[in-house]
Image (cartoon, rainbow, N blue to C red; front, side, top):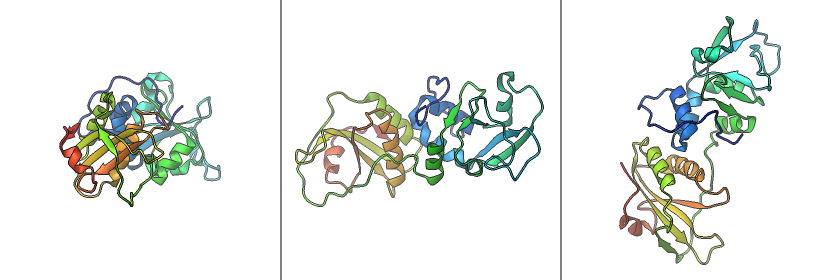
Length: 251
């Protein structure tokens, strides 16, 4: 499975403002715009598991005797009710609750399966879990500073990436500090990079967190080796150009 592969993805629908982690799981399965928030909440909210016996603190990497699925993955759940979905667990079990971060840290090196018996499930691979815990799961690029004047060609893309900008608009609608966002197609003839998308964000305050999420979501719609630049309005020499175009998002 890939970094955000799910069981049975369904068409997206906008979640309520106070969406639960379970609702975000379903939304993120169908819409990359909700994946950053899902990853954030996964660490902060309670997760649940059941035990097959008396806790054993001497058992390496599994002191609570959490059962394994037949394929070796460890089942965890967004709520106690999900343990009994579809009648797969038919007997009384001891149920436990832990903060997401604590549970992930308790099972290093394990592959976890969130809500394995439900219509929506999320596999969490060891490398992915390590990135979630380290806060690097959304990292898709690097910060560059242009130190000399550069002549570039910029305009609107011939094939407008409608699906991508709609997903980005849904993402930015979750960000109170995001005021507007613009898209263009840029090429620096003197640089080795081919022509590519560039996004200009008009945000209140620092841009790093929002640009990180924008880059992560945008990457789901372009090739793994493709480039996308992100700049902040009023801090880029290209701001005047973007101000003359129609934003794809306005808060």
